[in-house]
Length: 88
Image 1 (cartoon, rainbow, N blue to C red):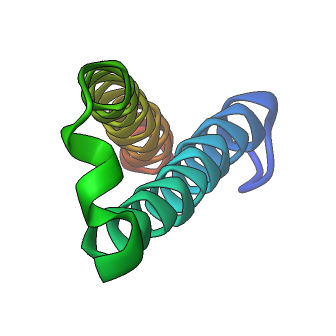
Image 2: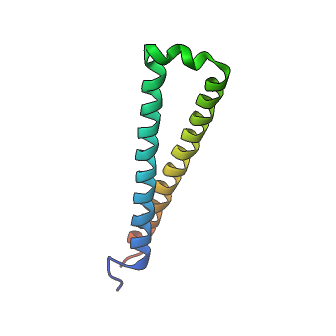
């Protein structure tokens, strides 16, 4: 009988926590960008071509970070579920 704490369960938990941390970090970045875009003093600055491209790059980066965080979280969760379902 395997114990609850094995290499597989630790790896699953670490991967899941890594994904959760990445999602939290992405959330903080996106929130700061949202505040900057909705600030009336900065609103007209984002209409300039260069800053508009910069905002697009940031939103693509945020999307990729969110997908990676969700993937890591899901992957870690699946590893944990598989580990606990095979225990007898």
